[in-house]
Amino acid sequence: VLLSGLAGAGLAATAAIATAASGGPASAVPAVPPGTRATGPDAVARPFRGPHQAGILEAPAAYATFVALDLVDGADSDVVRRLLTVWTDDIERLMAGRGTLTDQEPELASVTAELTVTVGVGRRVVEIVGAPVPAWLAPLPAFSIDRLHPRWSGGDLLLQICATSPTTVAHAQRRLLSGAGGLASVRWVQRGFREPHEGPGVPMRNLFGQVDGTVQPDVAGLDADLLWSADAGPAWLRGGSSVVVRRIEMDLDGWDRVDRLSRENAIGRRLATGAPVTGGGLHTAPDLEAVDGLGFHVIDDAAHIRRAHASAPHERFLRRPYSYDDAPDAGSTSSSGLVFVTYQADPVRQFVPVQARLAELDLLNLWTTPVGSAVFAVLPGAREGEVLGQALFT
Ligand code: HEM
Image 1 (tube, rainbow, N blue to C red):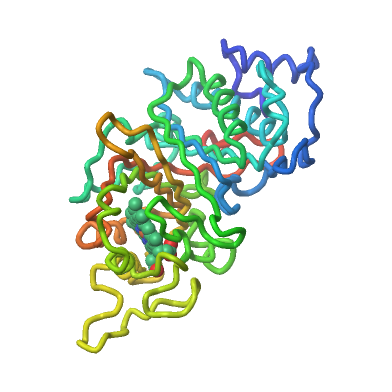
Image 2: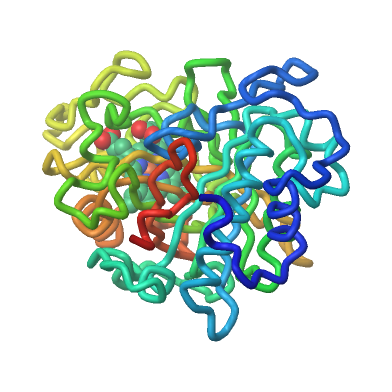
């Protein structure tokens, strides 16, 4: 199966796969069997094969790089197939702690650090292969708050690379981009980090100091339908999903000038604990109806959690954001924000109504600006013997 897409491939990587598969000389580097620990405390290997891709349901690892690529001009179905064939082999090896077939630094692959690589495809890829295109696979509608830059928007393909080691992420990125040589080139790269700042089980803190990621649908259980493509959708997407990647600048200087109470009111939650301003603990439901002595809502009418809260059950999605903190431009003190990442079965139905409501009114808009936006279909997982995206070609 692996070889079926290789005809005519002139790439070192594809040639190497062919050599290995035909019984030729394999990599001289000792392999770490899949699913075993390599060296070091953070060397857990995540499984690659299954009905869904890795990197969605797992607790997000601390470091991530998001890479959007564009297919080469004139790319045809064969180019797409070759790329997905190479990436399938590369990702399976890297997640298991083995170098790729053309790896010059396979030692860097030996610490798997919970590596996951998740592959998404944009509209152009689906059109090129002639598969049915879901209506939602397109740029999001323009929102009034958007200041989008092409540098952070769009793309034919997405790689989400997550691990607990930035070295592991960098190495995987390097190997996967090298494997894409001649087939696709980088459009943008966004790096992020996140930590359960107060320890395991507690969501991350973003660079505003807020506990971020508290309210999530139960996508591993009762709300799985919110995450995975519906049976009524295209057959090639069964077991797949969609991902929205929005780059949102956060004005840390402006935020610093606001008193603590106003900052808490902007979100509707306490900074110290992440608990709603209406009381209780981190996981207490906010009381959106509570009023103060003057009859005003305790959770401000423009507070982020009021505006973002689902007004219907389908307006929910899995948030998987990462902070970024780039080198500031000369004269400024920060270039920071969120790589705001969400997974959902249908972004137009689930994500867009919430984003539209926030664009209309949200106190957070005083300090946040979306500067990038992209939507991809997330391929189903590759089962044993399959190549990622195989069903696109049937
Ligand atoms: C909740 C921060 C952008 C959707 C929250 C919370 C924080 C937060 C601190 C409360 C804790 C939690 O439940 O996670 C931010 C920051 C943003 C941002 C700093 C931008 C830089 C967005 C965007 C969307 C969104 C663009 C969707 C379009 C939500 C949702 C909730 C939430 C759905 C849960 C609301 C509920 O309580 O039901 N956000 N957010 N956020 N945010 Fe955001």
